[in-house]
Length: 287
Ligand SMILES: [Zn+2]
Image 1 (cartoon, rainbow, N blue to C red):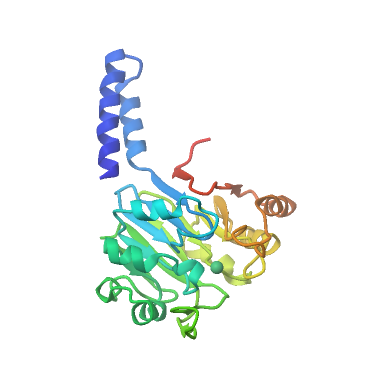
Image 2: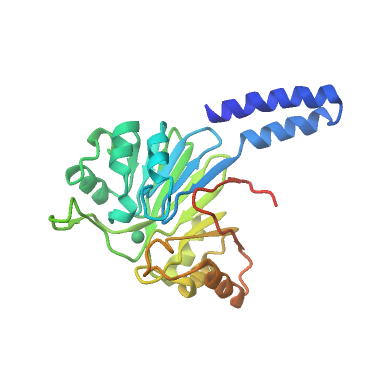
C-alpha cells in the first residue's frame, strides 16, 4: 500500500516534471523506479527495528517499542496497523518486548527458532497458528517468508535465551539465541547479530551472503562492547554498520563514539551509520 502511494505520487511528479520539460523522460522514470524499490529501516531504540520491503511487507525485529529510551513508544505501538512478520533473536524480555500484543492485534507471523516459538506460544500466549513451521526454523536453515519477499537464516550467537512470564515465574527454556541474516528481495541483506559475545566464526556469516548492513550490539556488560563489536565488523566486512543495544540502561556503557574509534584503529572501511531513535532511513542510501 505504502509503495503504491509512493508510485502514485511519483507518477504525478513525473507528469509535472515532464510538463515543465526540466527532466528527460528516462530520468523521471528511473527516479520513480528508485523510489518504489527502496527498503525502509526504522530504529526504535535498543534492539528494536522495523523493516518495510520494496514490496510493502512490514517486519519487526525484537520489537520492544515501549523501551525506556523511545519516548513515542506507546503511540508508535498503537499506530502499528500492518505487521506481516515479527523476527526474534532470543527470548529475553528486552527483545520479546511487545511481540505478543502486536501479534494478537495484527496477525503477524512469528519467525524465530523452534524452541523460542514454542516458549512464546506456551508461556506468553503468542497465537499458535501464527507461529507454525512455515515461519519457525532453526540454526543454519534458510526460510522463505512472505511468498519469497524475504529470506531469513538463523545464525549462531553466544548469549542466553529464556522466556519469563512475570516477576514471580521462573525462566522457561527458549533454545539457543541466534543472529538473523535477512535478505530482502530487490533490497539489502541485513545481518542482525542479536545479543552476542565476539566469536571468530562470525566471519563465516558472510561466506553465504554479502552483508550490506550489519546491526551490531555495542552496549557492553551483557553483550559485546565497542572493542569486540569492532572486531566483529572487521570479520564480517559489511557495507555499513548500525550500532544498537546501547544507552538503554546505565550499565550499557558502550557508545557510538568509542565504537567509531575502535573501527578507525582497525582500519575498517565499513561505513558507520549511527541512527537516531525513531529515525527511518532508506536503502539504497544516498549521501
Ligand atoms: Zn538484550
